[in-house]
Image (tube, rainbow, N blue to C red):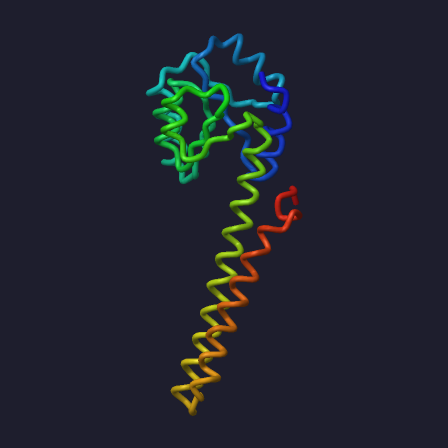
Length: 181
């Protein structure tokens, strides 16, 4: 059991509003010890790779987006089946590393909730940027159709919106963006 497993589980639960599920090929007794140490209540032990894929598909059929974290050869099919697969790099098998969408190189489980949080912030910024660009373009087009938009002002308005969108996106590079909310 990794030292940061309980913190990562707590943080993921708080972020997503859904408690993680432990899917393992280990025996039920070993899985129960891990679940007790991490606070996971939904435990499925003794699973084969296809059983893990079935569990992922079950959540997807329920309308959920699934993030699967694994490190072994037996996790590779579930990593591929999930919306997003994250492999733990240092101890991970080559197949899991190649199959996953992302790899946590330092094997820090707390990186998983941090990346989920950062991806949500990035998505919000993309939506904001689309809204800003859309408003600028709409105003410029309407101004040109209704009245007369001088070309230099149109270019300045368009480029100004591009600069605003770029500056808004750069907010993710600030150190504070990488700290938990």
